[in-house]
Length: 637
Image (cartoon, rainbow, N blue to C red; front, side, top):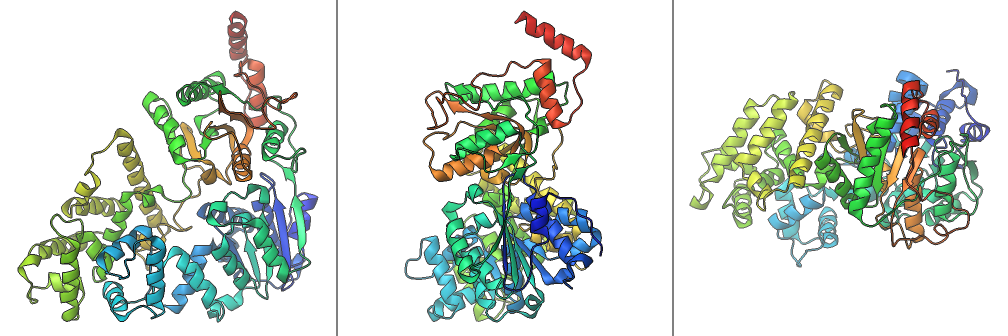
């Protein structure tokens, strides 16, 4: 394959660097520096005739931490390589770990924290296990047969296997299995790791194991390391790597193609650097970042709404609501503004999430129904589904498991088949199991509408709706649940479009509902132009927007981690940045400086200033009629 690459000199160095076994290339890539494009071009180069490498697509392994990063890499590879891109393994670390673990165990299960709590309630794990750490320890002991025999037996009753993992356990087990790796791993010759600054210890162990004897290309930026709460330490990880590779090749991508010089200089000052470490290739926009002060969060919310409306109106719609992002540290702060926008109307709302947010809500329970619809003979999801039925307690369910085990049949068969005699206390359970059987027989597993309708009916029949509404619903909760159901339905529709012939929509959804296959990248806009974007800074990482508002939140008394988080948030803006504060908030070295890098006054938008903004965005200029109206309005103020 012949390849023509248009790139900067720095990018060219990274693209064509040595890829010999046991070598390390570190690409330090600032915000908007073309990192993803550079990684994709390096992959294309390795596959091209120019490299003389003999590398095939299946000799490459490309790993990242998030679904969004994986989807962005896949999209960029498709743009460079066309159909060949589909042959390159690009996946999250958890997906890769699942593939390795799945090659070893034919019958294994993965539990999230809520599943683990349900398991603890259904299985007496002994020793007073209550914390998540203790529960995970019990699972680990059961897998290794170091737990007491009774606990192992009870887990076997639930799953038919002791190979039950949490998400982090899968990473640990993968690292262990790579000491004697499955055959498909032997194909890999070159490993890529994106977003290296966010790698935490369990992932770092996997990086060291999978890259042994192979070339390793890393890409990241220590200034954007914002996951210290997970144990991520760029410094410690880099030291571990350089013990193995004392002479790494390091390339700096320090040109920013995203943000204006004004935004980049201001963000650099917040980071604490006296001079920019990254340089904008864009000409100055002439619009300084805005550091506006508010008496209260309520006043701030009102200003943001009015300013969004003003930007859209004064630009004659050339600035669209979807050009605007409202970011903060926490979901609570973001949701307070989102709800205010919802109350006032006019704009659509797009809440960005790196993973489906419904999986962190009570609606994640619906996945138990999906598992039951696919295979009711696995005890755990069936028992979870029955646990919400009124007057059915955990003791009853444990007794049911015990009786089914005595007959050496799954709980579903024991309750569904009339030939098995049942004690009176279990009289009501067969009715619900028969209802599940009816749902299964009537369901078209390839119809997203039927699937979602069936899940909702099961929730009502099995009592989940009463559990969900036990404390009533607030207006905000109802809005959030509606958005969650929209997400589930859209994911089912994507499953229908993507599934291979051997899968039903339901089975493909079950396998991929939370991984990089079906979780849509939010950098590829799926919302319409009338939707304003709302997000935490952590979730918005990797995205860019023409106009960004950073909420006042905790924008003062900043430690190093908070400065990096703000730096990430601020550098999402390509053209205009609002870095808000409350009247009593100040940042050392930023506020009260002799020559501030920002304006403290709300913008008085004129046709000239709007035209500068539109020019930076590459949008059409204002019409002459609108310019005249703007000037007249300005003259009368």
